Length: 289
Ligand code: DO4
Ligand code: MG
Image 1 (cartoon, rainbow, N blue to C red):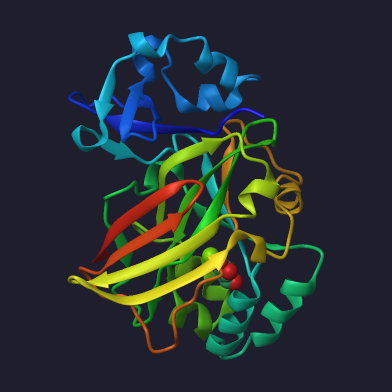
Image 2: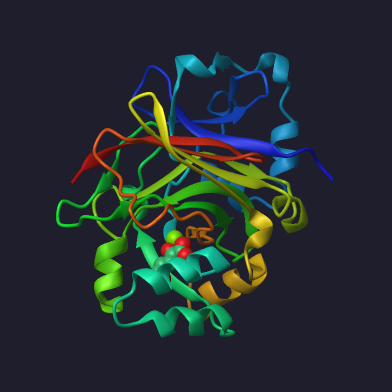
């Protein structure tokens, strides 16, 4: 079993994204320096570990993390999301829903999972960029989620962190409003890197932590475990890929297990910090869109 590798996209001095490998010493190896021009090509490779290990680390340019800007690792992948995969999510949706509480209970137990389209790749927000709350909604929350990275062969090749920003009052008003509650400007953040190597069993040992800051104060904090996801990764991916093609691969968010209490809503200037211990931290400020 190879040691996990954390791949990222970043900007240094030019406007051209570089591909990098994060080290535990807060450095980034610049893989573009040795001819790797896209993350997608590495994720499509039969042997990404072999491709990376053939380089002599001594000869690759390195940058300290504080001298680069990390970008979202999403290049050309559509982003999709599974929902109601944790018991906590099912209960929260049933409470917020005016007419359709039953639908959440049914989908939680049904063989076919809830899967919805979340974002075009070019609309995904990266680390440090603002996420949005809708100006026509009064009840907005982040959804911290493990994201599966899938290549064009429909194989899970890595993991990243996703924030499935959601308007609970819009979804709760009528389930047919789900696309408006979920898909709007700056509603999807993904980053900071793609981790390749860990198996599902290893990923299931990871914890997901959400902290929401207002000024310097933490106004909400919650934690769950990836192992609380009711469905296997393969099960969710197999439904996503039914009668479907992903020529550039895809990202699948796996649902949220952390839902703040019913009187909590995000405000502009809040800061959302999501950590998954096998991956890293995704942090974004909130703006009204
Ligand atoms: O059913 C609505 C969305 C559920 C969701 O996004 C989640 O459980 O994470
Ligand atoms: Mg979600």
